[in-house]
Length: 409
Image (cartoon, rainbow, N blue to C red; front, side, top):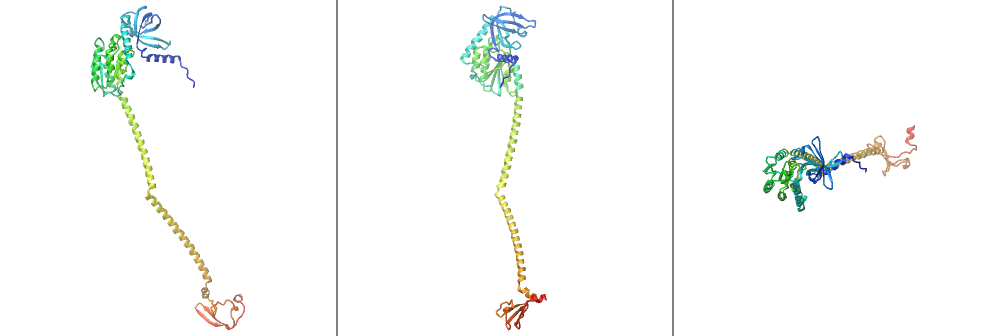
């Protein structure tokens, strides 16, 4: 199958997504020398960061550079923090600078990288060590500043998405020297309770110094030791801290942490309604099928019921008996007609009928019927049988010639 060739814009867009999804490239700090600096009339700053071997293009937008405490210039050593992305139109990657510090601030980044390498070697960042986030927590503990925007965002989202969930807030400093210690105490307290299903900790955006409390080693080990699942939401989407690497789930913002911690009750209701509808459909279909099976069983019972079969056989016998009667009647009728025919024939041959018609039967003395004159002689005694008696006579004379001749005459 021929693969469709990609457009240049599609490739650049794909590479951009790959770069933005990389954990390192999405939050890094670079140390280098500024060159080719240009402060555009739009307010954006364009420059290169270079060292003795290479350089990278960089841009710092107006909204990020307005709070700079110094004016960048060529040759100045700085530490730039931000993320690497691709400028899709030209197909060039560059550093998008969110914070820019003079080199003196590089010590914080160095400490961050050293601690990151150390804890990673110890296995604190392993995915296999991370706990599953509960699907529907009943109670969530939150460790953050009680006055910041982060807590307001978290509460608003939780109330909107899943009102049944309870919220327990542990107020703590989120920046400064005592912040890491207070956050650790809050996490330990919430973890000691049996009614907390999930913990959220974090704060809104800020500079690397403001977020550095979440790069504390003791805080990282506290997070790793928790038995309760924890979500961290520190700074903006491009901000990463040691706490993010150790936690069970990292959210890009406090609002996103709240989104990830609970389901949307409206979606749950819609899902339940759909499941109920599907269940009703399945039950209805099951009942229909079972009724059809019962109807078939009833039909089979009626068909194979011995009483019904006996009734059918009785009806069949009645039919046979009826056919037999009809056959016998036909035989009797036929035989009756035959008998009548025979009777008619016998009646024709019956001598009594002949006698009753005026004829007689002549017998000799031995009782033999005399059928011809050759059987008698003159003077023989004979008997003439009539319908009402017998005449005894003797043969006086014999004349030849039949009675047919006399009739013909």
